[in-house]
Image 1: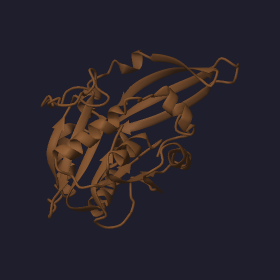
Image 2: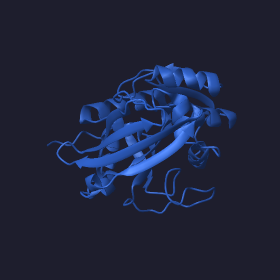
Image 3: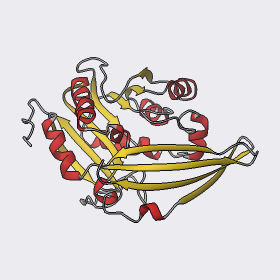
Length: 269
């Protein structure tokens, strides 16, 4: 789904850069599923290293983890066993009709669908995979927040961490492409061993909350909750028994939607 990426191509390095020892993302997801009475069969779409899928499995759910990255899938099967890991492209996939009670799509994975056709293809695939009344739970960047941030390109973030005796330093710059409705990221990696710098670029679609609502209705989903937190990647982060804020203005969006029996006709231009 993305250009070659140092972290995505090296899953152990990804987990070192983004540690989640308390399995916050998995706990938040399980709490969402429980609060809406979801069944046990869960598809973790864009499962990455498998940490969240394995947490849901340990919580008693029957989990399938799907990802396009072979490196991630190999790592997941080895280090986070339990779920059934499958290769799939979230933009269009077929893992069986009605096989799941819930589809979860975390860490902005849904936003790798950069066009209307890709997003509708993903949602159609999710709807087909879900049993009647099944849930779609997603967590992502909020387009409403980033589209108003013309100052992003003037700033950069620097992060340093050590993994297996090697120190990594990243310099990350974000910029908004309003014409393409994309959040673009440029990242430069250097290490303390003198290796040449690694340049990487990626991009996510910027969806407005109401745009997401309309698209979901067109695709055959009813939105049950759409809010900006608290969640696993908000500040402060989600804690058990937290109540959603009820707003959609901060940098993250949290979605729960239910498959309906019918679809709304697509709006005409």
